[in-house]
Length: 424
Ligand SMILES: [Mn+2]
Image 1 (cartoon, rainbow, N blue to C red):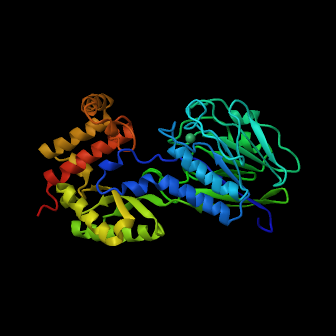
Image 2: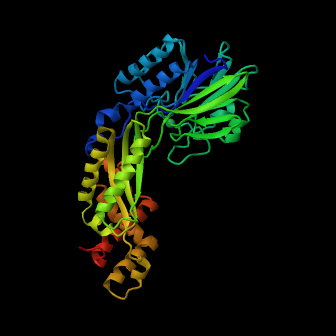
Image 3: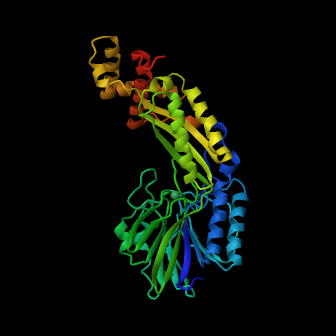
């Protein structure tokens, strides 16, 4: 324990053993490293707690992704808890929507140093010797829609009060609105630190008192980009002294955006991608970088890229292997460049080409035309494999934004073919 006070580690959303669905279908995916990443990040978390002399570790829900297929996930978690127990580190956890009481049917006893907070009512675990109390309530069922925070106990005087809750607070994009509450519900409770879980993006909602989403421990796909880890907190003299995020991930996901506006041709684009990937690999600090390359911008290279995207994607994959070998995997190479032709001007042309682009613009603007196209696409959609209909690989034509993107793609596919700019 440090001279100043007591340290604890706040983590959430481990989602142990969950990983990108359908990973095997991705070109050259380092399946084992990615599948093992949530476990390796937990090992890093325990290493951190031990190295920092933390006295307490908090898991604010979604330790498990779902009911265990077998006991191996739980055995692994237990083995890591035992490493903490041997050094006298206490653990408090509660259930989130993914590992709600109704979801997890199997059971494995945990070491005596581990406390689960109740899920039928709020409960508190007092650590007099540490000067802290942890209040919280886990999820009984997957979809908890009531405001659990309101019924949390009053703060105990003379102790640092920590509230633990799996919640979307007032709602966060991409996260189900479970155990909703307002920030002032939390702030007004009079606790010193709110250890939240559920939202996978790290976010500090308030510093007085501290209200913190540590984010998930390890990103699992490209929509969970950037550094992932846990929050290290030091308390002393009855208050929070410091709060810092520590990166604990072993695979770093990210989107590597490359602006091709200044590129004269596809070879130039390849060079620009190489530079961007080099910088991204440096930023990942020795971890495996799982990157999606997105080439953007209005560029003279658009025609060349759009005529043979497979070739240029392969060219980019080849150079990725040169840049960083096994420490870089390109999840996807996406060309989202635009032709430099002025579309508005094109639409004014009094010929067949003008008519084509006016037609496309009309589809974009007409609710009826969009609905008709959506009907045709849904017939096509229903024939796709399940993995392409939902989940991280989904083509997603059902919302208006992705529909617009689809129309963009059609326009940009047609432009170099019809207008012929950059034709060799
Ligand atoms: Mn959750």
